[in-house]
Image (cartoon, rainbow, N blue to C red; front, top):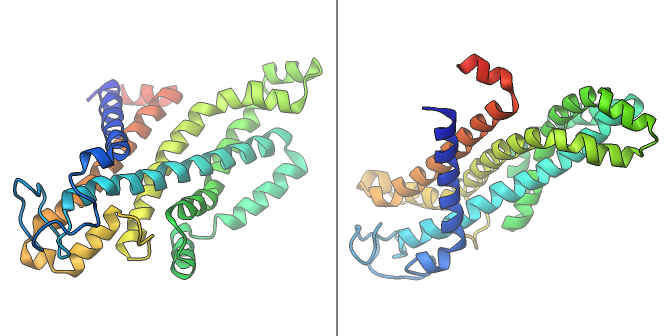
Length: 273
């Protein structure tokens, strides 16, 4: 499969998920919390994916769960990439004492595992979905700093940057006009992989039962199905759809990230020819 085909397929899947998330009130036939029939009903014309133990329509909950998953992934990734890119540019551009201080902080921060810390914070404070996404972004920004900084270190001594500085341009202008545009492709790839990572973390929190209880998400659906005998009773329509939805969006983001990596790194294209 060619890189262009992978890129088009991944973008199509992600776009479809985004459309479903935005149009959830229109697409979902029922309110995700409403009792719509008999409990544990198999799929039929009124309930394409049946109902759960609370007689809630599984298809509607699957549609609404797309919103929570994409929100956690994209909002968390945006915060992580913006913060990591800004700190990485400043650290790599100025170097010296600034770079040394930033790197020592990053070295300590990167030893802290994100998921266990996020698990503890959400367990004790029970934040909403937006606060959880912000926490993900803040905790996940440290890894991006090193990646961006390493690229900026080489750009900071490039001829076009040195020449611009010799002409009297200010540091802010150089970083914004000459450094940032060359970093954006790398930041874009980091955004894609961060979004995938944060989506899976959010689903994991929901599966453990410590996510936002007021928000429908796929992790909660899988957790409730497994705890209420979906596997033993053979209720595939309750367990498999959210699992497939998680798998498909994760694969689409992974494919998009790898396709973008080829685009920004010519050596990878040569190795895969």
